Image 1 (cartoon, helix red, strand yellow):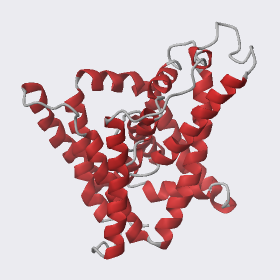
Image 2 (image 1 turned 60 degrees about the horizontal axis):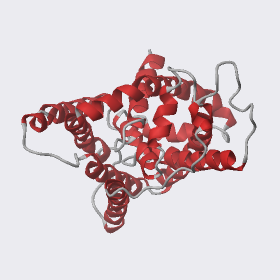
Image 3 (image 1 turned 135 degrees about the horizontal axis):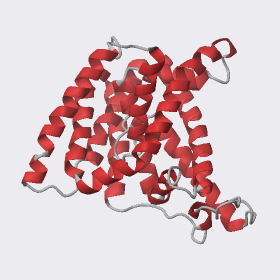
Image 4 (image 1 turned 30 degrees about the vertical axis):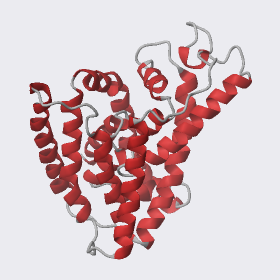
Amino acid sequence: MKFINLLLKGMAVGVSNVIPGVSAGTFLVLLGIYDELLEAVGNFLTNKSRRKDYFLFLLPLVIGAAGAILASANLITFLLQRYAASTQFFFIGLILGGIPTVLRMHDDMRPSMPKVVAFVLGLGLVVLLALGERRGIRGHFPAGTTSLWAGAPPGQSPWAGGLGPEALLALSFFAVVGFFAGGAMVTPGVSGAYIFLLAGTYGPIMKALASLTQPPVHWGVIVAVAIGAGVGILVCSRLINMALKRQPAVTFYAILGLICGSLVGLWPAELDVSVSSLAGIPTLVSGVAIAHLLGKLAGDRSP
């Protein structure tokens, strides 16, 4: 039963990873497994005595997340294209409904100057990222490397032609973007998909993920991003885990700021008063209700 429970939670986290503006870290908080995941990832390589426990905890999460990413890459793109406002309001509701859960994650959450400063810094970071994406401030992947994500002909290895300087540059770029996106994935309020958007790589990466179910597979992008994201998750998890152990209340206030800031990025850029936009109200209420239920199921947690 525990395996199935973690598998389902991993699926929820996986879906959040492919949606710009939705933070996987926020979902981890709402699901009540954030601090446990940081402990497992951050100490997996160093704590040999608990490595088996960490593995049994992480395995269903990884399987669920990977499966959900593959299954939802095309679906989420469709929903955001056809029902953008309603979909975004649903995730806004999830975040609003999850704020009380964060406030209950430590015994001493009374405001103080260090906590308020941490909240403002977290809020400001995500707002700047969101405004940057809205204004189209983004990088561009190196040109002339289409073959790396276009897939190889049937029966031919994608590495058959070797790797020239441009190909290596492109792979390095995708790996670096993956590193920062991986760090964002375990940081509540910060969306890994946002990092892809800001770097101008969201389209190629989503296309590469979709190719896993619709060959030929775009192995170049997938491998480079996976390696970078894996390292980013390990590094960032350890840093946040250390912060939670040394200054838990201040860290949770920073997390709360990150989560609140993500509302700016999720708010529909073009919203008019119409039947289609008003349809977002029920989805927002549904999101709040689901987040409230998740918070109750997770229980009051503290690191």
